[in-house]
Image 1 (cartoon, one colour):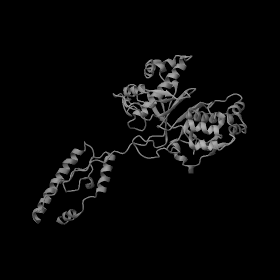
Image 2 (cartoon, rainbow, N blue to C red):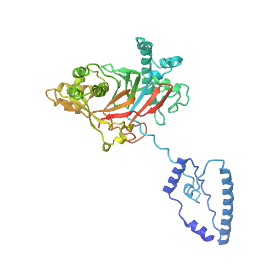
Image 3 (cartoon, rainbow, N blue to C red):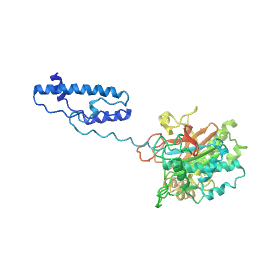
Image 4 (cartoon, rainbow, N blue to C red):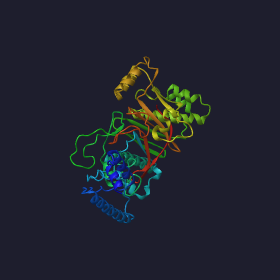
Length: 465
């Protein structure tokens, strides 16, 4: 017995690495770390040491027995000596492991709302949405021809404000939350504050318009959360709104990443489709439509091309009549994207029955277009490439704008276009760092603002490389 005690006494204490690993495992599984071992009393002789050791062992067994009886009604406790502090040396226990850093934020976040899901009949929702808007936005609602149109406009304004407020106020969880009106436990209700704080933040947001009329979030004062004193504004989030029959969407990107969002009904099929395409689309887009043999395939391609073009125009924020115009650029749906393109992780969106295709963009060249692009977006790369067209008829590939084409519902197709993303493709979970930095990926929610939200996974139809 004395030999066993002697051998144990000669074993080195657990290393710092083993200690930290055990502490981390205890923290992860909710197990309380073992208390530090008491200091070993100094030996006064062989017999006395043996007697003392035996006495201590007996006392420890008795203590362990009492502890095990009481632990049946309490939390589990780690029994590993590696978790105790420097076994037998009387050192203070180590501090618990640091909390993991927050997950990287998505590059693109989109909230979708259906007017038919909003409980308009209770009156309280209408009043809550109206309370978010300043007088000039409320006045804009009154020109609606019908009550249904007024409700859609009101929902769109409320969606923009609550989406941006959610991004600005997020404080954890899997994503930003819209928060429940009653502060209850809807999805996202506890993501960063009470419903009253969220509504107040949404109410305080201010918007301005660029020279073409596109609204943008004004730089936020230091007191936007409700504090005192104001202060200089910081970079503002980028956003864009779209609405079509039965669906309204709001896209949000980090500062410095302009975004355009468009959605259309999949069933859209204009009369005289080829005549419209010849008048409004680029020549290569018209050619892609004209070679199709059946009307259904032609209509499906047309609505995808149109949605992508609208998203590009809205991202630039210059309107469809500004250079290069709808015919001055061409989007293409090219070869299918393959698994070796990283498709299984692309955007974090699920795949449909058909393989998603690569989305391309070409700008018609010419010095005038190059100057316009350089002025509107400061793109030296695209301006130089466009100017190289000489006669203004050549189309030059552009890599500055990136697209995601997807199906947010069974009835709709949507496209998002972003300019100057920090990384591409937006692979979900890629990139590093917490602290509010975006890490790539696409996140989307279906919601009724100030009521509930839940994450959705739209089907990926195409993406830029």
